[in-house]
Structures are given as structure tokens and as C-alpha cells.
Length: 410
Image 1: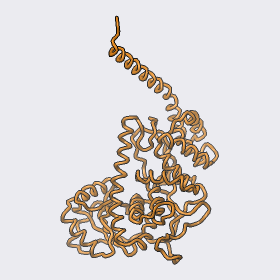
Image 2 (image 1 turned 60 degrees about the horizontal axis):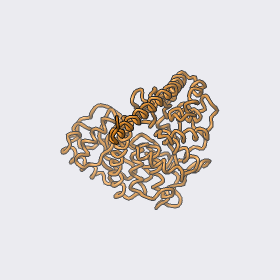
Image 3 (image 1 turned 90 degrees about the vertical axis):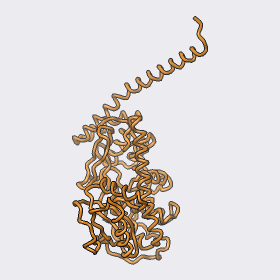
Image 4 (image 1 turned 90 degrees about the horizontal axis):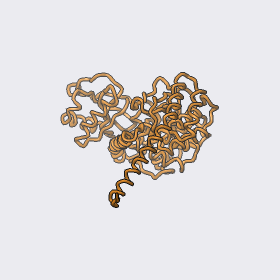
């Protein structure tokens, strides 16, 4: 029997397909023990058997498993199961980041920044910021305000700091109050509007990652391909829960936002000592500014005076209900979340905006308006909402009319 060129081509293509499939199945077969080792390490970590966990992770990490690599980075960062070693932690974070582990990339950029290797850090910081990572947004926002290691852009700086503050980063809230003193009202208004856009873009970026992950079996929260349960490193009582697809990763979670003791209006500095306590698991740099070893960053430059007067610790904004009781809606269910609709130098404009929006948007019906004082600025907020998701849902409805809106934690 003679084969035509077409049939031969089809046969060759079929053979190659079978070869590729066999190779893929072989790869899956060889990957199973590695995944089992990572999962075994996760289970050991949860039992407090840190030495055993590290032992389980070493082999898959050496073979390129990004979850195992990230976990080793966490272990070296915390000094659990191994001596604390920030250089080795950095090395493992980089290996995992190079293999597409998103959470490792977030941590790696912050480690580089803390080590004063800022030119190396900034590409990672920018990418993390685009994904909505609040620590990275805080760092980039400060850099854009000062105009030193990033282009000066006060509108975007204000937007980034607003987003970091809205996600609960206390240092960002204090820095935002400082920015209120120097950034013109017009730019602050643009920044508030841009903050809502940045939130939408970050959500789209995360959804894009999730979509790619769904087709490849990758955890969108980490970018890794393991299928074991994640380890939750010991976190403080106020740490936000890790929202991951159940059973989709095997990494040690980083505590989100540790408390800060930074005072006044000075942009806070990254502590030079490592943070390896249970309340600060992983690489949690919620502060930023001066090189390692210094106690505080310089006061914001730009149009700020050469020296800033000493100030007491920044006071928390005082929320005051809008006066006219007859016009104010009934207070909704209790909760820690609100939506912010604008910021004004004139309180009357804030009241006027609420009056108009309340009539136009059914989503605002029944909400309590708040006038939150932040220096010379009055922020119009409404709520409360029990969850961030509920606040975002209301914002989505309000945004359809073209009104800037984003969720904030009170």
C-alpha cells in the first residue's frame, strides 16, 4: 500500500500528538510525588512540625515547584524549621517568582525595596500595584508623590494612596492626610476618580489571572500549579482571611496588614530588623521610605517646606452624619465598610453631591451619609456595609451613572 503525502502527513501529525500526550502524562506522573511532598509539608506546618515541613519541601523546591519554593522562602523569613535568613528567603522568593508565583513576586519586590535595591524593586512594585496589592500601592504612591524613584505624578500618587488606605493599610491613611496638605484640590479630585478606575483595572487583572489559571490548573492567588491545601502561617487576630479557591494551592499565606506605630505626617520607613513574629508572618512590609537603618523617611518634598513642624500622631478622621435629619436615610445594618463618593474643600459641596446622588441612585436608598473630616478636606461617604463585597456591589451600581465610587474601611 502506498501512502499519499496527505496521509503520511496525517500519520506523522497523529504520531506527534500521541508522543506529546505521552510526554504530558509522563510529566503528570512524575509530578505527583512532588505534589504529595508539598502537601505533606503543608500538613506538617499546620501541626507545628516546621522541621518536617521544610524537609518535605526541599526536594520539590529543588526540582522547580513554585509553591515549595515560596514556602521555603516563608520558612527562612520566619525562622521556622530553619535559622532565619533573609537572603535565602529572598533567593527562594525569586525562584518562585521567576516561575510565575504571583505572591512570591509581591514579596520579592518588597524585599528588594527593603534592601535599598530600589531600581530592581520597582518593576515588581509596579506589577504588584497593578494587581491591587496595597503595600505595593503604598510604596509606589509615595514614590510618585516625592518624584525620586518614580516619575512625579500627584494625581496617580493620591489615587494609589487612596486605594491602599481603602484596603485597610493604616500608614496609607496617614500619608493620605499628609498629601491633603500639599496636593491641590483639583488634583485630589482627579485622584479620587482615578482610584475608582484603578480598582476596576486591578479587578480585571486578577480576573485575567484567574481565567488563565482556570485553564492550566493554576491558583490565581499565587500563580502556582500545585493542588494541595494552603498553609496559613500564624496570623494576628485582625488578619484578613485568605480568599483562595478551596484546595487549589499549597503555599504559606502572608499576613496582610500588620499594625504600625509610625507617627505624624512623615512618610514611614521600612523597619531595618526582620519581622518574623506570629503576628507578622511572611514578608509584610506595610511601611516604606528610608533606606535600611534609618528611623524615618524625609518629609515629602515637592512643594512642602524644607522642614515640617513636629506633630502629634495623626488623629483618626471623625465621621459626622449629614445634618438635615429629615433628609437623611435610615441607618442601614451595622458594618465596618462604607463607600466613598468624593472629597471636597467645601463641606457644602459634599452635602450637595449627596442630595443629588440619593435621588438618582436606588443603591443609596437607606444608607447613612457621613462627612469625614481629613484636614481641610471633607470626604463624602455612605454606609454602613457588613462586607467589602457589599460595598463594592453598591459602588458598581453608583458607577453606572458616571460617579466615582470605591469601598473604604472605616
